[in-house]
Amino acid sequence: MQKNQIALIEAIIFASRGIKKQDLEKLTSISEKDLDEIIDFLQKKYNNSEEHGIELRNIDGYLRFYSKENFSEILSKIVRKRSLNSLSNSQLEIVLLLATRNKMTKTEIDNIRGKDSYNILKQLLSSGVIKRHKKGRAYVYSLTDVFKDETMIEELVSNLGGAELDITRG
Amino acid sequence: MQKNQIALIEAIIFASRGIKKQDLEKLTSISEKDLDEIIDFLQKKYNNSEEHGIELRNIDGYLRFYSKENFSEILSKIVRKRSLNSLSNSQLEIVLLLATRNKMTKTEIDNIRGKDSYNILKQLLSSGVIKRHKKGRAYVYSLTDVFKDETMIEELVSNLGGAELDITRG
Amino acid sequence: MELLFKFEDFEGPLDLVLFLVKKNKLSIREIPLSLLADEFMEYLNKMKEMNLNVTSEFIVTASYLMQLKSKSLLPRSEEDKEFLSSKEKFYTQVEQYAKLKEMVENIKKSENIELKNYPVNVRIVFPKVNEKKLKRIIKNTLQEIEIKQKIYQIKKEELSIEVIMSQILTEHVGKNLFDILKESNSKYELIVKFLAILELIKLNKIYLDKKFKIKRVRENAKKSNSIN
Image 1 (cartoon, chains in turn green, orange, brown):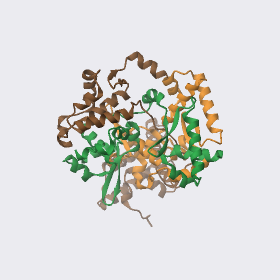
Image 2: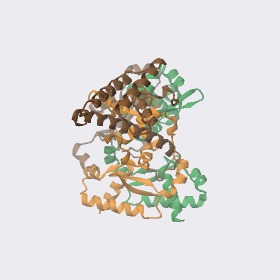
Image 3: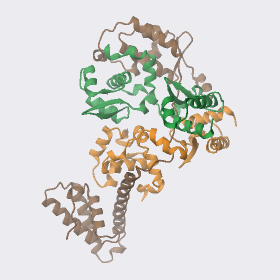
Image 4: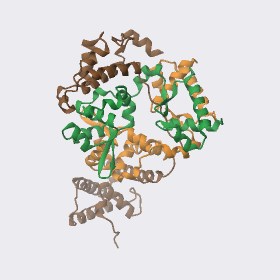
């Protein structure tokens, strides 16, 4: 294990918002075996040390650094943590739809809600909850990373049983 | 210096988007002297070690972790970036104003640009570049975290000379 | 020959002023105010002739410039403090705007320059409950709930997380999570209830004990927790 390889992997994991091992491999041309060693080394270094406030986790195949749980209390004070209850019901509806389905067009959203969502989408866009990108002629809407980080909505929804809880088929 | 205090400070800095020493003090009730020691310790640990890919920097009084320079090439490949070129010159004017000044009212923006910015603010709001909140009777505009993350506008501006570009104090 | 330009380029009066400054190849402070004011009026008239949209901002700036011009022609105008300060204010505004436009150009160019250092963050872990057990509870609950209505019909029931949060605090403390969720009429209601409970946990208002009963967090307990 070379020092600069450890540093490289550490930098990439930090800068990415979660990255798969295979992508690390491709990006760095470090062999899988070496990579496993490095990841293991990093996990031991951070996760087991009382001197570190963060830890390296592997959640659903994505490597990412997280704050340690014992600091969650104090961290919730500094990080502008968006509270889900600041959303109106209609806004929440769309957020839940996007949290379970990831990407949707306005037409799809309208169909499920049985009404036009133009204004609510606009509100959510301007408050940084959702983003959109063009796909062909239509816009595709999804939750922003910042919002997902602030609310952990994905974790909440997946806690609820994930696909099974596809509220759109209700 | 206690281990758990080091871990706490580390967690807070990592979780924040840049935090001032005074805020760390208030938040943790660690004395300034101890805090200085801890920050110094963290900087030595990360910045001087070849095994670490990130470093603790103090930019304009804000403490934040950054990737090290020698990994910039590889990181530019994975860090998602939104191009500023998709914005018009007028939109960029407002974005740059907000990047240097953080928060501004429409009147302040109009004064500097010598013209009405209503339409451009509307465009920027609906594309998730800026957000606004009410303060008294006026709206205060600022860049969204999503936009800041995706464009690294703050870093670009500080690369261009940072404080020198504070055009509003002319 | 006149410089060719597109009138449309002048989005606002300051853009026109900067154009005139450039045309004269002098700095704003070096151009005589009377010249600047006259040229501004000239272009404004051309714009009107071409039926271009001359906004009120142009008119305001034009009259301001004419005012400055007439004051500048008075004897001893350089001793008139009021005149000097409004002149300075105008220059500063133009210079600031020029700087802003320069910044726009620079930032466009700098786009291709690689950043040296990227800021990094970690994801924050908020207080959590025992996930596996919780998941099982939710699944069991779900099986008991008949889905009665589609989401847009249910919406009419006004399920706001905020309301449900206060309901939980006032009515459901001491009850088992499972029992609370079971009372839901739809998946949607269940999700909202569940979110409300997680929200309260996150806000450190309640916690779940080992039997998944909802307990209130006492104030003094909060403080001692936060230091660790």
